[in-house]
Amino acid sequence: MPGYEFFGEEERKEVNDVLNTGIIMRYGFDPLRNGNWKAKELELAIREAFGCAHAHVVANGTAALTTALAALKIGYGDEVIMPCFTFVASFESVLSVGATPVLVDIDDSLTLDPEAVRKAITPRTRCIMPVHMCGSMADMDALQQICEEHDLLLLEDACQSAGATYKGKYLGTIGDAGTYSFDFVKTITCGEGGAVVTNQPDIYLRCDAYADHGHDHAGIDRGADMHPFIGYNYRISELHAAVGLAQIKKLNQFLSVQRRNHAILKEALREAPGISFRTIHDSEGDSCTFLTWFLPSEEITQATVKELKAKNQIAGNFYWFVNNWHYIRKWDHLKNATTLNALHPDLKKEVIHHANKDFSSSDAIMSRCISTAISLSATEAQLKEKGEQITAAIRKATAAR
Ligand SMILES: *Cc1c(COP(=O)(O)O)cnc(C)c1O
Image (cartoon, rainbow, N blue to C red; front, side, top):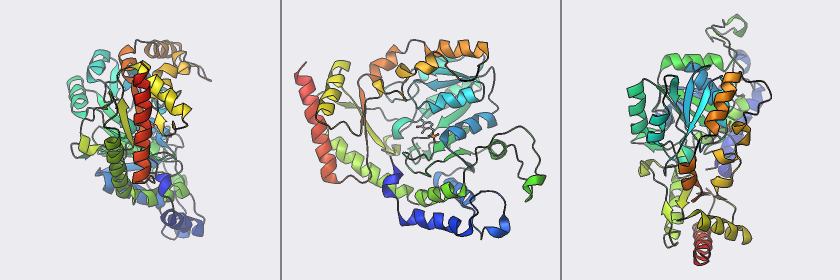
């Protein structure tokens, strides 16, 4: 997943363009910037890379989600259906616009279970927010169908899956809006950065204004801009955008290395007893940031993790079931609705309700699931060695049962 592994001259050149003028803000100062518009160039590069009509770059992926939700006019009283396996940013952004995060089960694609989505729909549901976790896709045909039947918005959290596709379309560009994160550990990085993409001009214009205090950006004098609605400041700096511009030019290279390394590791795990792999709804479109695999039982999985830890080989292997940041089980702050500032009491009740539902069918999947991160810089020999280590750990864990 991490573009930071291939960091070098290209990033330095783009950043130096900005440092040479000292104009590190993305708006204004036209005569002083020597033609450098890195955020704008990054937006153009995103549109070209992912084949969408509009892109707006912001400070990070969480800001991108918040901006997208606001631009979709989602707020108090609205329910947003999202998966119980994601990064905390997904529900943080829903709460930040005052809406209710309705968490539901995932299936063995590690993304929204369409049946669980259907069951969660109420008259207040406004939006379905699939999260394309760990480099590959939710079942977009099924989710689009549900959105059409119930007249719902579709917002794709593609923060972990820039460059992945579903039936030929880039993840993020299929729904009403989509978001990417360019934080330090994502497929491409700005250091800190993110983007909203959409094919609908009105949604784009709202994002463009919302992320900059509501500026309508109608003229070249910022002070004379109008503020059609209240916004926030989620701007990216030119320095961060410059890094992202260098990185997106290398995206296809990253993807091809990831896909090659993924295939080598998968082959090396073929003989592991009882192993099976994540359902990928369109295997050609997998960006291959992770190889995700299952073992037959929670017990064997726990024993495998223990064995990898004992041998100091756990690095790069993620057992999400016990992870504090990615799975409902450890989100006590959400289950208790612990916030610094008061939530409306009705919202608080709903947050607590939805976070404390029965997620046993997701538990049955996540307790047997491990994702191995695909490093860009790993050699074939290192990948094979990793595969052998994991296979040995699984063998030992299995034999002991
Ligand atoms: C990283 C991530 C985000 C948020 O991105 P940041 O740039 O770190 O704010 C949102 N959703 C998912 C699924 C992520 O992995």
